[in-house]
Image (cartoon, rainbow, N blue to C red; front, side):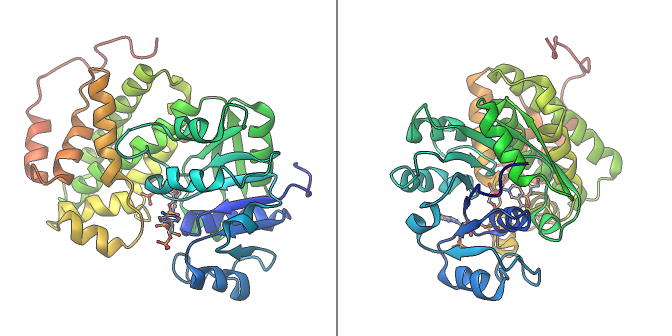
Length: 341
Ligand SMILES: NC(=O)C1=CN([C@@H]2O[C@H](COP(=O)(O)OP(=O)(O)OC[C@H]3O[C@@H](n4cnc5c(N)ncnc54)[C@H](OP(=O)(O)O)[C@@H]3O)[C@@H](O)[C@H]2O)C=CC1
Ligand SMILES: O=C(CO)COP(=O)(O)O
């Protein structure tokens, strides 16, 4: 268990940042949540509720919230960044000059830097320098369930073992298991790709294609994750664990998933714009599908499910055309190459 003297700053007061900050505060660590919305910060600080992102769920009275980034991180021993991936670079740029020298930086966003396709650990290393301990927090974890105190397991991965342990120690508690590891690339790839694949299963379920179709997509989706992971140098076991298979199953089957709900809406004939507007929260796959396909193309890999998701999201094909394309693919062995070597 980390010393209760560890002070934590959580950056990003959406559903996941609020749930993680509440979890850490409940474990007795002084915790400050930073968000850009003054009304939300005030409601968390004074009424112990995030009415915009986690309405009706009581938050610990010890959790502080502010819109002042410098004040949020001033005394921090550990900074946890939980903004959407499209806001990760600007948030780290703002954090870099304010970060106390002792504070390592972890993040729980899932995705890539839009445009460049860089992994978030590459962005963090670039903006913070090589000496700052880094870690990614990922795995099957709906914010609402964590905020409600329901049992959850996730993983913390990074190269600095002492920092990874510190992050795991502030998260770990009676209803929350935090595992550890050192594979940031694999862990980030899994968290990003499962969002894209959740759209595919959502589309299939929205089209009422049945449980066989859903499970076929989950399994062949896992195969796409494993192949791209092998190409980028992630470890296969990372993708067979919480950061890969675990999060894939949760997001492809759980209706709390915003990415799955986007797919469901598309499968029922809605437009991307209408579906995203109705969901009203971040839907990472909309940008991540492009970055996954760019990464796959750079490595000469064909990822048929991910490609269909990208093309449906762009409006280049309909869900029905995507299904027809998948079913018309050539017959082939299930494992044509040495996947696990
Ligand atoms: N929710 C979940 O169950 C889980 C989410 N994640 C990941 O966590 C990350 C955050 O998602 P989540 O909290 O769910 O998203 P939400 O949609 O719930 O909230 C997004 C939050 O990010 C803020 N934000 C958006 N842009 C910026 C910016 N430029 N600078 C500062 N803050 C910004 C929003 O502020 P404002 O309200 O002012 O727009 C809001 O507080 C995503 O990468 C997601 O994939 C991972 C695991 C679980
Ligand atoms: O990452 C998540 C669960 O692990 C949340 O998934 P969504 O972003 O699809 O809601």
